[in-house]
Length: 342
Ligand SMILES: C[S@@+](CC[C@H](N)C(=O)[O-])C[C@H]1O[C@@H](n2cnc3c(N)ncnc32)[C@H](O)[C@@H]1O
Image 1 (cartoon, helix red, strand yellow):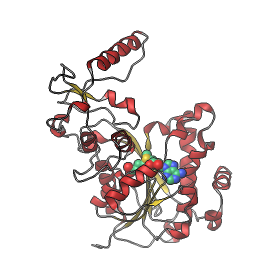
Image 2 (cartoon, rainbow, N blue to C red; image 1 turned 45 degrees about the horizontal axis):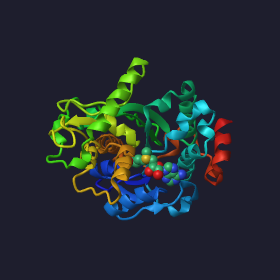
Image 3 (cartoon, rainbow, N blue to C red; image 1 turned 180 degrees about the horizontal axis):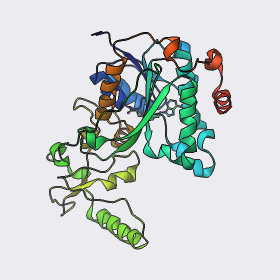
Image 4 (cartoon, helix red, strand yellow; image 1 turned 60 degrees about the vertical axis):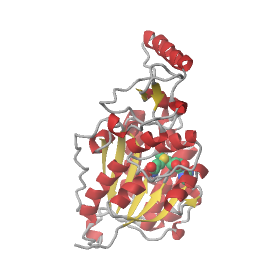
């Protein structure tokens, strides 16, 4: 068994959910990037260094050699397809920087994460283009929707995971779902302060709003969870927190004891370790956790990938399906788009 650590780079790093999962599986992170000042603040606090700049300004020559590229690239632009933006949106171009870096550095594998609907936008055409681009730079690509609740955390969170391997003799298989996870009650904090409880006035307002919307046939996102079960998806937007309310101890502020989940509880639902710190205001911390990849899912993917990439056999021309265009790394993202569409 080769015990040399496989090296990864963490792009669109956020606060490092993917990173922690890969580190737990024995990978070593050699470079990280994100352009969000607050995400970088949390990342630095927990891991030390991160290259804080827009991915478009990252020169491939400044990235050390590595084996696996990680990237939870932004999903909003792809959901804008209805507004005729989609792949042409400025932010969608960040995907083409993944292509730029893959083609220049040719790592053995990549793992990308996104919302599960990415596969459905514009009748699947957006995902087809994404996949074609990844194949165009030499990778054999597999994708699967994995739900965090099947990987040891009581959270329903379905996300699309895309894995590519340069060695086409590898038949990558996603990790099998485990069905048991502890109930939500197992990770709740005790003695939570009044700040996390909803005022009765606000709670009544939410219920009225919900009633009005359900009459019109619309679901409205306000839910009190059964703590013997699991949570809904932890999302980045503020109102998403109202879809994960629980009934705790009645008190002066709320006689039914209705409160939101705390930052720590949300972090636990995403698999973050207890020692992980959020040196940012509370609303930012919620946002960062909602944006993260669930650590447990990343770890499960990392473990199966590691088994397939070790022993580190050289990737030869024979097992790469199509040769990589050597000048690709020099192209701009628009040129890359054109080249891939051709
Ligand atoms: C979904 S979050 C990533 C989650 C993260 N990979 C994890 O493992 O938990 C997407 C991140 O991409 C970053 N981002 C978006 N566009 C970027 C760009 N052009 N350059 C650098 N970072 C970018 C955002 O700041 C955000 O932190």
